[in-house]
Length: 243
Image (cartoon, rainbow, N blue to C red):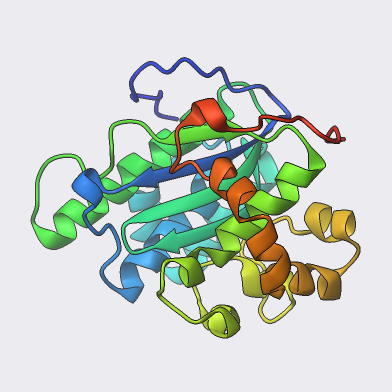
C-alpha cells in the first residue's frame, strides 16, 4: 500500500467517524470527460477501499477476466476495509464521498491511492502532465444524525442543483448512489442500510430527497453542510447526536 503523499492537514480523521469528502479538478477543470473515466473512478474506489498492499489497480486491470475475478475475491476475503462508503456522486469537475473511517489513516490512504491512481490514468489517456486534483481534498466530520441525512441528500441532489439533470430525472443519473438507494440498480460498494433505516425506508428517503418544499426550507443548512462554503460556519448547532 502506498503511503499518503498529500499535504499536511489540520483535521485528524477519527476511526469510526463519518466524513463528507470533496475534491475538484485543478482550476475547476473537468476530471471526467467520458463514460470510461466515470467507470474507472468507481472501479478504483471499490478496489482501494480495501487495505490491499500486494497489487496496484493498473496491474490488476491488465489481467484476464477470470484472473481479475480471482484477485478481487482474494482482496475482499483477506483484506479489511479501510472505509465504509455511504453515498457518492461524481460530477464533471468534482466528486463527493460520504464515508466512515474504519482503520487508522484509512481515509488518507484510500484517497491517496484513489486520486493518484486516477490522475495517472487520466494524464496518460489525454497525454497531459501535472496535478489533476486540487492539492488537498476537503473533509467535514458528520456530528449528528440530522447532518448525516442532509449531507446524503445534498450529495444526491448535486446533479440537479448543478443543472446537469432535472430533479425528476435524478434517478437516471448514473454516477451517484441515489438510484441504488431506491433499488433501481444494485449497489456497487455503497452501504445504504444505515441511512435508509435512519429515515424509515426507501419510500421515505425518496420523499425526503424529492420534497422541494422541505429542501428549500433546509437550503441554508445544506449550504452550510456543503464543503463549498467556509468551514467556520459549518454545524453551528450540534442537534441530535449520531449513534
